[in-house]
Amino acid sequence: MDALTLATKPKSSDIGIDNVVLRYGNGDNAVLALDGISFHVTPNEFCVIVGPSGCGKSSLLYLVAGLEERTGGMIAVGGKPVTEPGPDRGMVFQAYTLFPWLTVAQNVEYGPKRKGMPAAERKAIVEHFLHEIGLAKFANHYPSQLSGGMKQRVAIARALANDPEVLLMDEPFGALDSQTRHSMQRLLLRVWDHSKKTVLFVTHDIDEAILLADRVLVMSGRPGQIKKEIRVGFSRPRSMDLVMEPSFIAMKREILELLKNDEDDDH
Amino acid sequence: MPPIRGAKDSPVTLAPNATSPIGHIVTTSAEKGQSGRSVLKVIATPFRAVPRPLAIALSILVWVAVIGGWFALTYSGAVKEMFLPRPESVLATTINMALDGSLWEHVFASVQVVLIGFVLSSVVAVPLGLTMGTYRIVQAALDPLVNFIRYLPVTSFVPLFILWIGIGIEQRVAVIIFGIFFQQMVMIADSARGVQRDLVNAAYTLGTKRSHTVFHIVFPATLPNVLDVLRVTMGWAWTYLVVAELVAARSGLGYISLKAMRGFQVDVIFMAIAMIGILGLCTDQLFRGIRRLVAPWAN
Image 1 (cartoon, chains in turn purple, orange):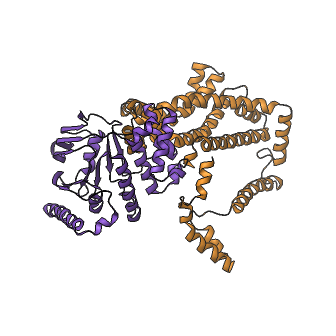
Image 2 (cartoon, each protein chain N blue to C red):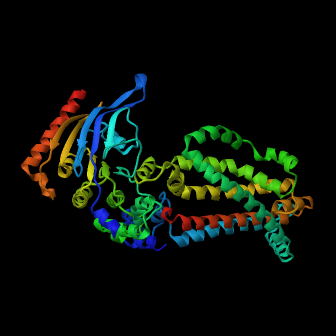
């Protein structure tokens, strides 16, 4: 049961992003995607980046994951500079990325197995996380037999089962219908309350951003820059009714204005 | 596999139900009128499934028509028996050769060559093709050469193989390998190249080492495709087998065809062709079975 205790008392690290530049191509065709981004995510913090599509917010997440190479600046997770992808940075993608040849349980088990964890401990972890996402009955199903929302739930469980130091989430609910999205947000809030992982979450949905975040970073596009940082002080656990609160709506209006100004700058 | 069957009963798999509204409309209109038009509508709807009994009946009907046409052509005297034997004489020849054992000797000889050539080709082409599709550096090195050789007609190499290897079984195996290896490699590399990037990215964030990507991700992700490539190239292997046996062999189905031609035993040629067709059908079904067994998620 050691592994399970570990999983319920998970690791959590900070993310330091310092003057990060990302440029695609070179010469006249060069595109500046990110221009000197700096911010710091503290351990156990839920940090959400919200911005218009194409502002480079997903690219920033891929840089932290080590899946893309930055042109300049520094990224460090838990004090270690990021040079390549690794299991210390778990990620949930917008596209469905469950391994289609593995069952739900085998998908969740994948990371611990790569680490060489003994089978009994793996089993305990898989059971714990399948229970956590409410899909214990689907342990032996293949991903092709699941709905979109279920697939993303398993993807979250798979990332958490590997006990990463930080969890990166790239618009994980972007492809889901609004009802499923709401139930996914509730589930994520609940699961996160148990794990308190450091989360860096990217979305273009402002409601989602405020509802989930301790802090929202508003990004502008072309080149991507952090426009404003907004602390979200609502107490946890949060309910979905929060979206009707005047203070929630005020915050939403502020972010909308910031994004709107950005649009106006374009023209 | 029980998990799959379980899922069909569960409310999760919405896909089959999703088409049901259309299905209802069609069936009800068919029941109502029993008119020719609604039946026509069912069978003329693209991609719409037809009832299984109808499908089986149709497939049998086509066979009956083909064999019936064969009877008609031979019995009416429209075609001389020297060119087209009667069905029953082909059947009689088959039974005779099966009873005296010569049929099995030739079938075994052919199957042996096909299997050796196919297995030798596949065990190299699969890992090499996957590596070529995964690593751009391997692709850069091999792609131009492979695509050049792929377009060379195998038949033009048969004299060279005879010169280099002789007329033993090695020569026939070589023809088969040359015929399918490069095609297998190109098609397998293509399916490896098509593996979703974020699948590989997800594997990295879960601790998969770069050097293990082909084994842990690319291979299982492409397995259904790889099996399809093997199934298709198995058919080609039979074609090249006959090419090889027509030129230089002492046994095999291609060899008896050539020998029968010299004696105008057209019924033997027909028997040999039919045997190859039946063997091809068997290996095809075998591969489908293997695919269902080792890649149950892809059905």
